[in-house]
Every structure is written in structure tokens, then in C-alpha cells.
Length: 340
Image (cartoon, rainbow, N blue to C red; front, side):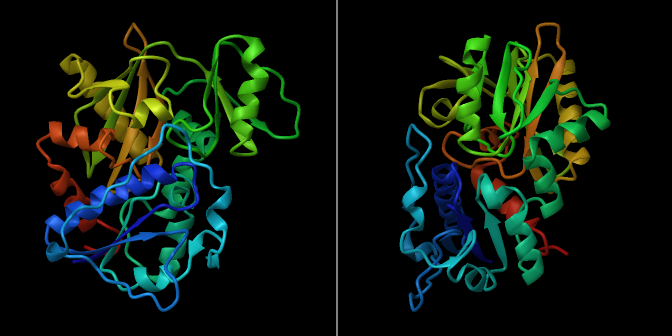
């Protein structure tokens, strides 16, 4: 197949996306495909030759994720393109059999890119624009989960410029549409409230405060109609924030998780229920907290899970006997418009 791996974008998760994109590109080259890694926001200059890479070109792409969320202010300098789509992106993606979406956050995960590709008849991996919109908008996702009987921590929505009365404590404050724990603060007492609001509002004008659940943290990947083995996430310090997610040695990740057969089955059933309630595509990843008494709470679902060296979905797939190369291949072959 001829595959475009679309990464980068204008999002706080840009470096995570580029790391995912580099690994995915290497995997597809090793699988014998023709591959082009494309930045969805920066695009390609007019007149520049677009060369799809193959085995003869080698597989040496990589991208290092910094400790802090990247600054985006200077990214637009000298850039061509309209809105969130870079110069020649549609042209190049139209030449591919499928576009593997390695984007995280922003227009790549909230349904905007998917809607544009639908309009142009471009085949892509993952979830449709409707499912992306529902999953990425945290208040909407929580309302849909609640309507489907899926436990999720109680919450309150806040909009910048409106009255911001404190929520119950302890709580978690987060932007409504960011991933990778960007802009999240654990608020244990009222003195931390204002700073938490500032941190979240720095990314979006709508934020969420939800009850802080004390317990073990898990994630469950979905591939097709199959729940992959759960992974338990144990940060060595603090919570599972941006640095702990993407810096080596910061978090212990146990897969398969140390759960009873009954607990693992219940978590898999609930993950599939979340996946269906939000109308997600061929794959996703669903995040949970488990209290000491075994009560489960769903935090959110990810429509484009990370594929970096430290990402959870590839670890879960490996525990199920699926290699990174096989995982990429499976996702690509089930892209929208590929098998239909």
C-alpha cells in the first residue's frame, strides 16, 4: 500500500504525535509499504518533491519528546496553508491508499481532520468525525457514558468569563479537549483552585472539574471488538502527567495488570461499552480508576492512542501477542474506505 502517516499538527501534543508518526513510518517501511511522513500543520512547500520511502531508504526516523509541553507560538512563522491544514496536505493525502492518523489532540483528534477527509473522499484510520468529537469533548463523553450507565466521576463544566465557584475538594481540573494530561492539576485544597483554573484556561476556554477518585489507574485498549489486556499505570512520583507519560523510567507500567480474572473481564466489558457508547472506530484506548473496593470509574476514551516508545496501546497489544508491526498493519487495513 501507499501510506501517508499524518503527524505533528497544531496541538500541545505535537511532539508526542511526531514521535508516534516516526515509529509508525518505520514500521510500515519494514512491512514493505511506500510511506510518507507528513506534518498536517506545516505541510510541504510548493515545488518540493514528495518522495514516498520504501525499504531501500532505511528506517531511521525518530523524534524525542521533551519534558515540557512544547510552545506553539512560533510554529506559524512563514507557514503556508489554510487554518489547521498545511500547504499541499490534501493533495498529498489524496495520493495515498490510506492516511494513518498519528495526530494527538487538536484538529487531529476532535473530528475536524476526519470531516475534511470525508469531504475529499480520503481514506483514513481510526474513528469517524462524529466519534472523535464525542470522545474528545470530555463533558459530552461523560454525559454519554452516564446515559449508558457507565460510572464516571461527577463533574462540573466551567467557561472562561463566567462565575467560577469552587468545586468540591479534592478534585481534578482539566481542559475539556486536551489529551496527554496537558493542563491538568490535582486540587487537594481550595488554596490551589485559582492556579488550577489558570493552568487549564491557558489551553481552552472550557474546562472541567471532576471528583478526584483515589485508587489504581488502568487503561484498556480496544482492537476491533476485542478488549486487550489491561495495563496498570504507577507513576514513581506525582500523577500520570505529561512528563511521567513520556520520559523513560518515570512510571511503572504493568501489563497484563495484576487483576483477578473477574476484575479483568469486568474492565474489558466496560471498555467495550464505552467504545460503543461513543461510536468509536476500529481501535481506541479507555482509561479507568479503580477504588479499593473494586468500583470502576471511566475517565475518558482516546480515539488516537499514542504509538510512541512509551505508549500504552502497543504494550497491551504485545501482551496479547500482537507485535508493533502487526498492530500498525491491522489498523491501516481497517481504515475508513480501505476494506469497504
